[in-house]
Image (tube, rainbow, N blue to C red):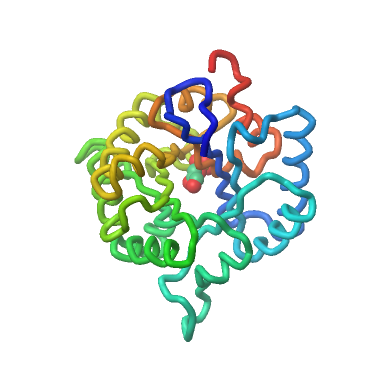
Length: 270
Ligand code: 13P
């Protein structure tokens, strides 16, 4: 952490632009994308210290991406899209946090709405996975967000606030976490939240972090917005004081789009 950026007032939190590839790209396609992205940023003389870039490939790509990042000295962080609540043992198909750590993963997504929706992951499973990540030295990227129905019934912040409170139960004060606010209705829909909507919820989520982990941790915690982030709307989000970056799905699979999102500081008016 360290660099104070233009736009927003984020007290030294280094912005984090993260690409969640979901179930896209085999290992060869993964290598090609990371190489092209690195070249695009270097060609544009992007200042790598101003924004942290992280990629979250499928499990089967992690080893290849790790090897490329370390061989070519590419300044991207690596994360996984999920982990097991267990350390090891007879859990067919599961992936332990200790295996991810060994692959130099710094981060792991937890509680993405697609895991909640298609794999029935409730808040209790999310909380257990947060603990498993921390135990293995991974920073959990805790995903929260309301559905369109929640939005109508409870407003924007009630569900994400409740989800985050449960996810942080019994997490020690001062622990590093990242929070991703992803309204489910905005994911893959082309209909992003407005920067003001994102700010309102992210501010409340920071208050939850303060209550659970302390004021210093809350001031240091990166809170990301996710849901139809694109080159054309990132600058607006990054102007908000409690939005410290983005969790990008579809646009992270396209080199030019993702490079433009990473280079949001160059966009007019930021
Ligand atoms: P899109 O950027 O494709 O809307 O996906 C957002 C997301 O789910 C990232 O985790």
